[in-house]
Amino acid sequence: MHIRELSVPDAYEITPTQLGDDRGVFLEWYRFDRLAEVIGHPLDLRQANTSVSRRGVVRGIHFADTPRGQAKYVTATHGAVIDFAIDIRVGSPTFGSWDSVRLDTVDRRAIYLSEGLGHVFVALTDDATVSYLVSDVYSPSAEHGITPVDPEIALPLPFPMDELVLSPKDTEAPGLHQAAEQGLLPNWDDMRAYYEALAAGTVV
Image (cartoon, rainbow, N blue to C red):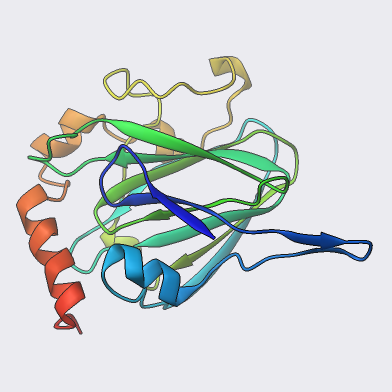
């Protein structure tokens, strides 16, 4: 597999090698050792999620309190989505910026997002099925959101507003600067220290 860092630091696109013959296709969509070589530590897997969405569904922008936060390794097992990583770490040189990866069953790519990054995807097809491995269990009290239609972030959502389907929670979420003013966002320096602690193996 090929792993490439995105323009948002600490987010990566993973492109697997697909081996095809008359029976079909085989690939490794996750390798803990290859990922650890790149990010500097093994991914501590604590939960696996799957969502199924119809065309136009937007899920996010979501993030979890840090530490511990929730790193995510995401792929599409049916249909297609456009998946965005957003830098919401206050003080980051790329604060407020985003990058994206198309996840589908053609290239079968995955995206890895480190703790402290915002995550959102948009279903490009009906029955878009997304599976993701995460580094901590879901905790409602630690989960937060930013509205995916925040004009400051200006995500290039692939459908007109009247074709997008958002949950009330995501629609009513604050914008990026509102979230910062409310003290919800992670801090760049704190996250760098946390990544170093993960690399040193001192995070429990």
